[in-house]
Length: 306
Ligand code: NAP
Image 1 (spheres, helix red, strand yellow):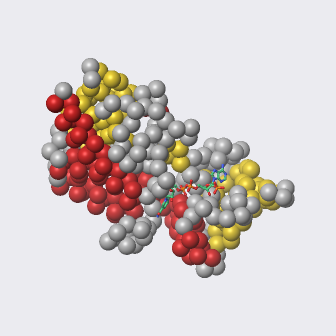
Image 2: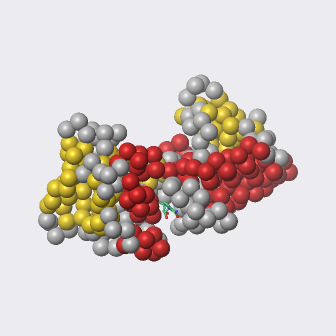
Image 3: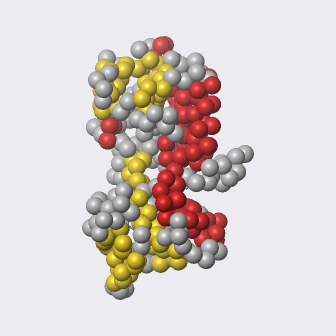
């Protein structure tokens, strides 16, 4: 029986692990990907985390992980398929048939990339359609690519791709970007990025691989652009399905909790991007982990004194 099982090894899960080790909680981290560090690994450069200006996301994530490992965190590689209450505790079921029991859970499973749901997207995924510029950008040296979206991820992807590609179309459905102002200014200085605003992508076409996209502007003008690759960066959806029917979720599927991480399910705490919050960043994910462990300690102390 564990004091706490931490689900997920992104920034929130790793921060939880570091704080749980220091609080001497009997804990493990269950992670889907061996040596995972979550979505931070997909960021080329992180400029807004204190003290580590300009660090690439992969290295930053590995530093977090090594910190947890140094403190003795134990990681289990498995996919969680179910969470179930059990006599005041929680059982965690994993894909290879194991069942883990714990007094509490820190749920830090993050989010996954949203799809466009347009013709050609599924067909050409891995054949020119990508959701990770850091992973696939180098394949587009001197090629033409389109990035779809107007948030921090899309603009960051466009900046990265502009280093490899001959031309980058940055296509956004509205008049203004959502991304932070510094990144917006940086985009405007890059000659091989063309911003196409008020425009939606409606189809991805190709033969063996992507060769073009069809777009339509909000005024109804349709265009075909020749591209070799399409990078989709249209936001994220929360990985909260395992808590459906267990803890309260908001209308977008985020797990409802304030900074304490306390959910409506006793003994389940939520940290990181999967929680309802205004700002989803490395620093807020890290803070969530710290706060959750404090909440877990208070919860365990209350149980003891009952
Ligand atoms: P996001 O901020 O939710 O932005 C998603 C973008 O995709 C929005 O511009 C949205 O348009 C657009 N979009 C959504 N659905 C679409 C569709 N079906 N077709 C076309 N466009 C669509 O997502 P994100 O950029 O992945 O960022 C997620 C969170 O991580 C944010 O909080 C962000 O600040 C954070 N983040 C931070 C950093 C950093 O600080 N270094 C880097 C990456 C991400 P609208 O604007 O019209 O809604």
